[in-house]
Image (tube, each protein chain N blue to C red):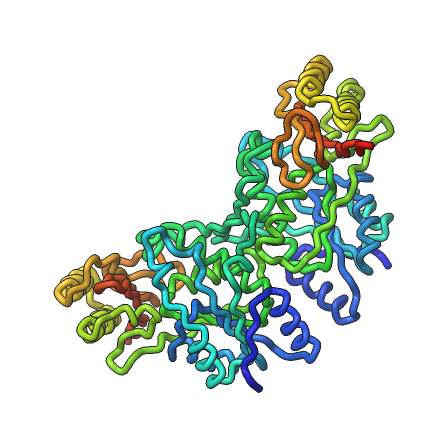
Amino acid sequence: MSLHTVHTVADLRAQVSSWRAEGLKIALVPTMGALHQGHISLTTLARQFADRVIVSVFVNPTQFGPTEDFAAYPRTLPADQVILQDAGVELCFAPTVEEMYPSGFATRLHIDNMTDMLCGASRPGHFDGMAQVVSKLLLQALPDVALFGEKDYQQLMVIKRFVTDLNIPVSIIGGPIHREQDGLAMSSRNRYLSAHERQTATTLYQVLTAIADRAARGDAIEPLLETGRQQIAAAGFTPIDYLEIRDAETLDLMQGIINRPARVFVAARLGKARLIDNFAITPHQED
Amino acid sequence: MSLHTVHTVADLRAQVSSWRAEGLKIALVPTMGALHQGHISLTTLARQFADRVIVSVFVNPTQFGPTEDFAAYPRTLPADQVILQDAGVELCFAPTVEEMYPSGFATRLHIDNMTDMLCGASRPGHFDGMAQVVSKLLLQALPDVALFGEKDYQQLMVIKRFVTDLNIPVSIIGGPIHREQDGLAMSSRNRYLSAHERQTATTLYQVLTAIADRAARGDAIEPLLETGRQQIAAAGFTPIDYLEIRDAETLDLMQGIINRPARVFVAARLGKARLIDNFAITPHQED
């Protein structure tokens, strides 16, 4: 079966309806394109839940702030289509901005509590815009499952929150972070890095894993985080938006010694790229 | 077929899935209960579009302001069930507040432009709360059609807006205002009126129809509205929140002579009841 690409909601729904009539299960993987192996690990995971996989490719203007990289964000649909074809994906949905936000559009979402921390603090309005476009994509396709990478862990938690709250009848699945050989989390924004910055970028992974290891063993986290910030700054990252440890479910800030599932989160700028990453902390069992 | 009542989203969805498996079309009529013939005119209209009719009964706390009548709003489920049974409605969905807004709930909707005028001006947050609960009800039931009365005309327009914007796959149908013999628009809040107030309340209908008639004939609307305000005030309404003429689609404020479909809108308080009404203005064709 070869990849089919549609650009309108009507064509997307026609294809989904036809699959539904055959009794097939459907997965959606929303992306902003500039696809890499991290995305393909999600389409592979999607096969465990569905007979047909849809990947949406849409650089959503409403989740970028006025000083952010909306204009510069890579748009590589022909290359994306080759990657999706090779991965066995059945449908690519690539709408225009006008198709998603026609004249008169007026509806906004806001998710309380979870969106004013981490990336929400440095990217005001980002999660509102993300929730807006993801709710639309979910309701346009109405898949059985939708998959999102844990690299954007806060995003995944926000999506689970509003999907539950609004009773959107779709199961949300998180996929593990896909990493380069040296540990750098795969990201479309990695292509902003120079060769030298690309080498430096692995510092984030090294710092996160070191902190996660020590915190899981019962070290108090404040000195770990302070050392981590110094290492990241010394590598040339500036500014460091955050390096924090939070509850893995509620995203509440944690202190002292970690006694329940947590994650360490980082966001920092290196040259033109704002990079984010996170790593699970699973406290060692007491004997 | 007799009326069945469910209180949980799971039971609602089980019933809807069973009907879907039979290939039946489904209509939803969201209400806050305290049912009257206006609601039943909507369930009757629903039969034109669907094989099975669901009426939800839920007094939604998030659309009431802190000084409004949430606590006093009539809750009459047993009487409502008798009315629905007599009307041939198949399913009543009567969730608790906890079922709709469980602990941790955090998602809000906002619709720009349309919600800061008319009732939005005097009831800040009302339409956000209404949109929140209606989006949930639509996504819980996923009916083919949902019906709303034109008495809450601004609400109907706001619902059409966010359903279109979020791509909720449901057709929204407006039902004409159902009136008492003397023209008073039926409303659950009419039961707040004393016998004397009930007689006076018809003034709203008399004023609206007189204005609509003169405006449709080409009279400039400002003097008509000024006279109307005086008549409503003289009848004992206070305060008058608004008496305005707006475009029937965009709700843009209109001035001078009406040359396209419009509506005249009123909201005013009489004793303990805040009453609203509206009436279509269809400009007479020029020869």
